[in-house]
Image 1: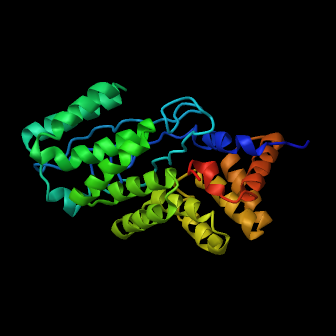
Image 2: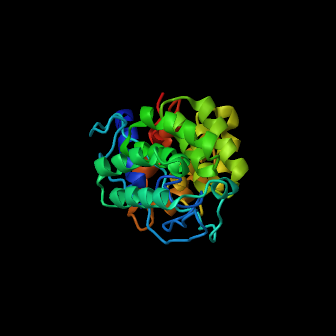
Length: 293
C-alpha cells in the first residue's frame, strides 16, 4: 500500500511525533537547569519538591501566534533529561531568594500548573519588582512565553535571563527561541553555550541536531548530535531517521522508524517511513520540527 503525504502537511505531522510525550520547558523555575519532573528549589538552602508547569503538546494546540494554525505549529522538545541529583548551578547559588521572592515564584508556578496563565504572568510582574526574584522571573517569563507560542516576547526575557542567570537551561531556551523564528546562526551559538554548561542535556543535543539537518555538509554532525539524544527522547528517532536518509543508510532508517513507531502495523511503519523520506528531501528539514524559514 502506498502512503502519500503532501509537503504542506509535513510540519503538522511533526506534531504527532511529540503528541505522546509529556513536555516541560527548559528552566521553568524553581530548580536547576535540567530537572525532569521535579524542581529543586534554589534559594535559602531549601529543596522543595514541586512539579513544573506541564506543556503536554497535542496536535493543533499551540502556534507561534497562540492560534490553531497548522502552518505555524511549534514542535516543543520533550523533557526527559535525567535528573541532576539535586545539583544547583553556581549562578543560582549566587542569587538566593528572599522569603517574598520565593513566595512569588512558587505562586507563579502554581498558577502555571493550574493553566491560569493570566494570574501567573501577574505574579511574575510582581516578582520583577522584588530584587532577589528578578533573574528567576525573567527566566520563567521567557519559558512561559515559549510555552504559549509568544516567541517574540520570549526572546528579550531570555536575553535578560542569560545575562543575570547564565544557566544551561536559559541558554537552551534562548537558542530554541532563535531557531523557531529562523535565526539559525544565533540559535546554534546559544545552544552550543548551553552544552558548554551542561554537555549531558539530551534536549540540547536534539535541538542542535535538528538545526544541522538543514546543512547537508554537516549531516554527519547532525546525526552525532541526535544519537546523543535518542536514548532519552523518543522524538529523536524521527529526526535521526531523516538524518540517516540523507546519509544513505537505509537499514538505520528502518531501525529508527521502528524504534519510534513501536507496535505500529505495517501501514503505520510505511506512513512514517514515507514521512521521513519526504522531510529529508526538503531544503530545510528543520521546518518539519518547528523551526521557521
